[in-house]
Length: 226
Image 1 (cartoon, rainbow, N blue to C red):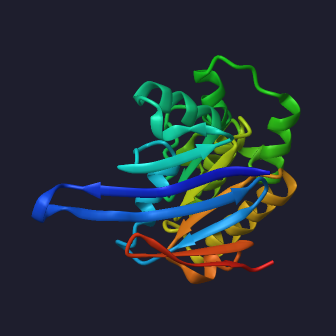
Image 2 (image 1 turned 135 degrees about the horizontal axis):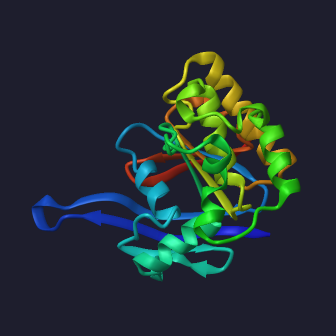
Image 3 (image 1 turned 45 degrees about the horizontal axis):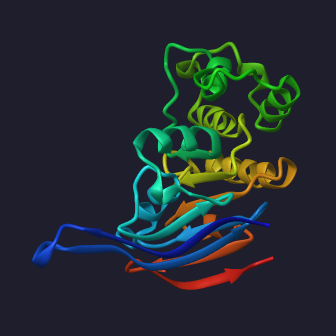
């Protein structure tokens, strides 16, 4: 089942002699349950694509459909609601609220939507990600790796259609980076979470089932690994 479809996505900044083409005709399809890595050097367009897939930004041309919804036509309010309900975002900076416990940080997307959490799903996620014993702690009482685990749990709590991880190990040491990549793979397999990893790290990209390489705003390679 196709969960994401990009059709001829272009993103242009500026005009005339100051025009910069960040994305130049991106066509991409992702099936439900896939773990896809998008890799490229700095300036290749991968972060711009991430922002468009996450409905944080809109393309200059083309369509992006997530579960059949064309997110490129949504206004700012509609985009915020769609993002909260359908797209999980994980960044290298954890963006946890420092005055709230880990439990409340994880549940925040549901609280904002005035939805009740599923206790079984909550327990499954925090157990899978190894933060079940840190739920009453504040973020500053956790290590960087533990905070990233909590951030991933927060992105999974409302079962998004798509989880986007933007350089999630960029702020971690080698040991914690390895653990976070393993947890992303575990979430993909055990929780059947469709996932796109944005990275410049080739070793991290090889953890995915499929590697898409971007250069100068275009896809130059799309390889299935397993």
